[in-house]
Length: 294
Image (cartoon, rainbow, N blue to C red; front, top):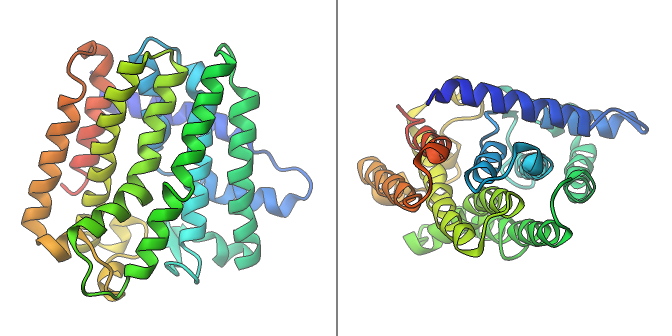
């Protein structure tokens, strides 16, 4: 399995679909701001997970592509809002100035709002060859993942925990499961649902996704203290400056890496029973997430 070729091929397909989905129209400024962050690059891990899960259960990429785009739109929204001065106050994202630095805070907020709203419009109107009941189920999963049971919950607890020296592992895990892992989980589950997966397959892939979602954040915490801003494409060491709870802070660097290895192993074990050839992209994506710090 050629993972590099797979990554390039899927990223190109996703980028093309995103470019087509969000075009510049009236009023131009808001659409330009949406496109600025949406098309700013990135590895497109979430869309790839969505497509790979769809194909694993026997579906075709075309069935999952609108959902894959919707997930990336929502992920981009979360980055735009996360970078705002009232949140993490960051000037750079993916090696470029953050949205509010280019378009102002007011337009940045609206660009994020627009991407969130358009994501649901797009998944419901652009998905073809899939039963309405499965589309409805996918929409429900996606909505749940970003509200007070998902992304918002994680962000709120992250805000109130910053600077609090009493944050423990349980609270840190809550933050990361809800702020980061939940959207990765939704990506995989949406792909499985839209690809025609049965209940057992969907739940096995949900377990897989929860492991890699937490793994993604553990590695992200490690990278924040081991890589430079240039290598990351965003401000390095920022968590330490604002006294944010992270795995390296609570466990130490070596124990954090051991925890990442455990999550990596558990994620792969969740894929046992699936066709190993069709599972190859998900295994490779897990390794990619796990070893980004090498």
